[in-house]
Amino acid sequence: MLVLMAGLLAGPAPLAGADAGSNVLVTATVYTSTGTSTDSVTVAALEANPGQCPPYQGHSMNELGRQGFVPVTLAQNATWSLPTILGCLQTPIPLGAVTGVTVIDAGGSPELGSGSQLTPADLAPSGSDFSSSSEYPVVQAAGSVNQYDRPWRGSPQGQPDYDFLDEVQASQDDQPTPVAIEVFEGPHLGVAVNASRTTVPAGGTVGFSATVTGAGGSGLSYSWNFDGGAPNSTAATPQARFNAPGQYDVTLQVTDTAGGGGGAQIPITVGAPAPAATGSHKQAGAGKNRKSHSPTGPQKSSGNHPGGAAGKQNSQSTTTAKTTTTSTTPASTTPSSTSTTPSHSAAPASTPTRTTTSRPPAHHPPRRTSPIAKPPLATQAGGPLVTGQLISDVLTLPPGASPLVRSVAAPAASAPPARQAIRTSTLPALAGALAVALLLGLGAGRELRGRRAWRPSS
Image 1 (tube, helix red, strand yellow):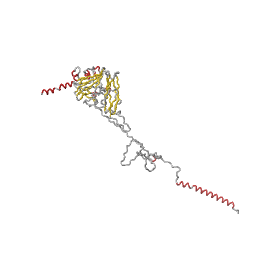
Image 2: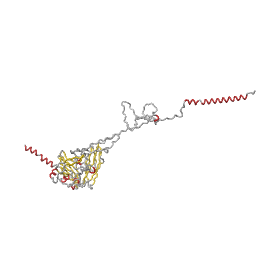
Image 3: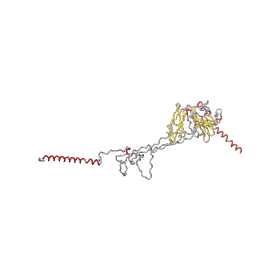
Image 4: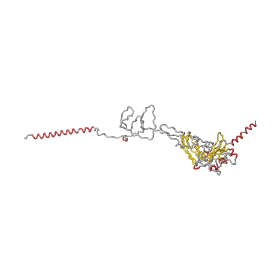
């Protein structure tokens, strides 16, 4: 019984050692002028040949994240530099034959951001071209994960190098999985990604194309990765539809038949769905005026370091200002309102039938146009509904100050005052009396002269 128990307790030890030794640390896809091949290296192979595959001597690496520098502790005697790993593959690759290395992130997309791609100068045995020339990109067997880290480049061309975002932790079901890399032995290809637009509403479609230099006329192969926002593509000019809001890093890896390769990435921001048009007014296009926000945590790392695990960005809410248009012209079915200016024309035929008392038009002062829009008045419950135009801001003016009131002189045919009529009517009577008196006087004088003529002499 004791022997059986001892056997059970001692049994797992060799098995655990075998699992650790069979851990595949790195898998490599190698592009050469003769074709493409795959290779790998295990932890056991590295540990079995410490002279040719010595462990990395650094104990930590200070990496820059979006919230500042993050110290990363490296596993002692279980971390190897990338130049060492390339020389310890099943088919070793001489560093002099390498023209570039691309690391694949945990999502299966090549790391093609600024500073992500590795050049021969990053792997030079005499010293790397990172901020600290004694540091190199490394891969460590850290228990349940295999982890890739690279050193900080400083701030080339004034742009900060967020090397912490390029950290890769490869694991599945709490078991380590290999870190995948791509090794190019052909010429380096310059790649520029073009997008029809970089900000779209959810459900929007983006067209992509690429400009490739340095290919030398050899056949090109394209590998588009849309960061989970759309299915990947191998077309030269694909179109991708993004249904879910978030920020996606679209990457393109280009290879040629001569073993060359290169790539680039472009961020695509997907916002909330564009609202449907209402009535005859169309909603303004979405995305172009939106401002994208960078996530605070690493985009690619899924580790437990400060800064948090990466996640898709939340959708952005867009507030669209609504414009209320108030018509100042009544519709043809609206009863006509009383004009503020006296009019001598006949009433229009469209005036609604209503019994009214005729009265002279009232003179109203001119209306003031207020630049401030007035809110509509609430309808009083229970009262009659009155239609027409509402005149507001009426300013009372004296009659003499109104431009609509003026004095008109009396016409010449108007009747004279009473006294003047009486005084004017006595003149003919007086003239007639004077004429009669004159005639009577002339007659009397003639009669007297006649009598003197026939009077007898004594």
